[in-house]
Length: 149
Image 1: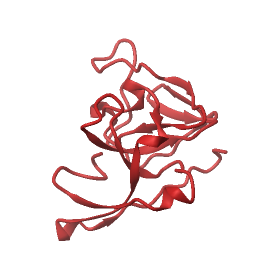
Image 2: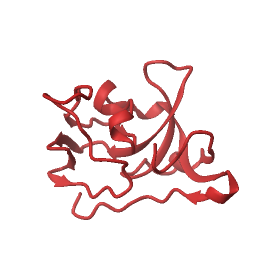
Image 3: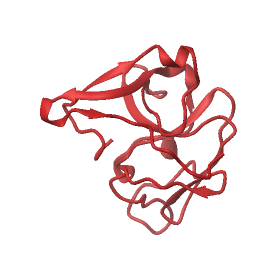
């Protein structure tokens, strides 16, 4: 999740909010990795149920609108002719009960572009605050995506 989060940071996870509302685009969430239930992952919600997510030309589009993502490390380098792994899920409509999640360090992230949709029942909670080390205390705010319905 670099540059937003770094190895060895401690985070405060809100395990209550999603009992009252659904995850929203931009939320940073902690969840059980769908392909190995012994691992927990942390990623950003890019697509919610009903969203059409497309990754092309090094950008992410939701419902036809290119996301403004100032929090990512570098623009994604997916697709044919690159040295990076192929994007297996680059054109997806998110069904009810699932999410499309991505890491902020896109070229080094095992996320929905690689392994598919995240079932919402695997969510542990919403990451709210990075509190350790003290000099790096950061509130993990949710970005706004103007124009994305």
